[in-house]
Image 1: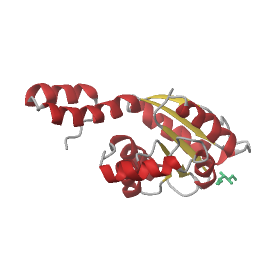
Image 2: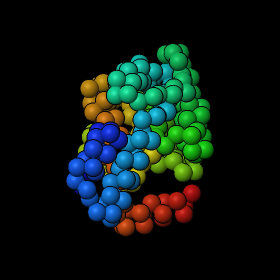
Image 3: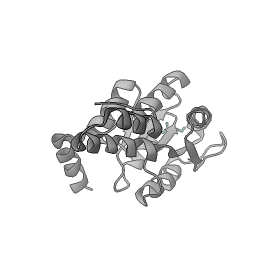
Amino acid sequence: VVGFSNCDEALDWIEINSPDVAFLDINMRGINGIALAEKLIIGSDHGGFELKKEVIAHLEKRGIEVTDVGTSSTESCNYPDYARALCKRIQSGEFERGILVCGTGIGISIAANKVKGIRCALCSDTFSAHATREHNDANMLAFGARVLGAGTALKIVDTFLDTPFSNDERHMRRIAKIEKGE
Ligand code: RB5
């Protein structure tokens, strides 16, 4: 498995190494994942608002275009409203990946996972962020601003965005079973 931080790097590697077709196919999935992740949607409630601002700044520094569905202040609001507004835009195919932040990450991830097609992983560590991409092909990440400091949260975000789905048959089979239950 070869990892790249952007499409240009991947294309240079392909040009130099001339991989065979099967290998190239596997890598193309990774390239697509990274390319689509260059555009991302984010949302929070009042509890997640301050941390969300730091996440947005970090993503923009990475060159990712970020759409923020709100909330836009620390004034009290209802996290399911923002979870739903964001998830609808993933469901429609407009975005491939999303991030949600609330106080604990719990309420907002529960709300997100009610939406068909959403696999929102609540993560408080990078191991989980890595595993949920590899195993669950999670399309959304949630975390709690009252649980994590910004340093850990940003490492979790990077791990989530940079880890491709394994494409392993056993994981695809299990995801299909999740979808069957929706
Ligand atoms: C808001 O006070 C808080 O309940 C919310 O941010 C979240 O932690 C819910 O799960």
